[in-house]
Length: 182
Image (tube, rainbow, N blue to C red; front, top):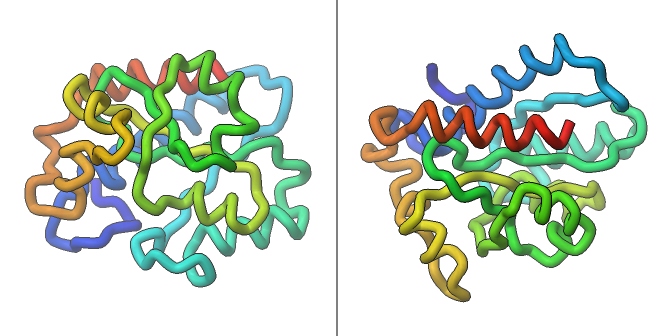
């Protein structure tokens, strides 16, 4: 099904952002049946692709968080590019990783440079956030280099960002890892 937050309306946007929307919807179903130690809120925000700190869904979400709409928020986890790969990554923006060492270690995640994303906007607005996704073998090697961007990020928003490049097994494995944090 199509994602709401899209940059190219004629692309399938399979990696960005449809796979993450599917992940969230599935996680919402699972959480409904779990006994939780703390409340978990799910938010699907839009307009990330406008690349503007002040007029996007994550900026509005940060206002709601600061306004107490969701109570005390420990951490916002932003899913990005969650359709293909066995390697979990987190954005290597200093503010993301400095307070999330335990999560990074538990997920055995690699820190990578990333383009603009919703977690960055939340962090800019003073909300604790981390951006997490998955990459395949070749892309994780490129992404962990100081100036390398994975090939899949170049495919995002293009006509080549198609459902046939998504792996249900990889998505399930990623989701299981994330659900262990709950």
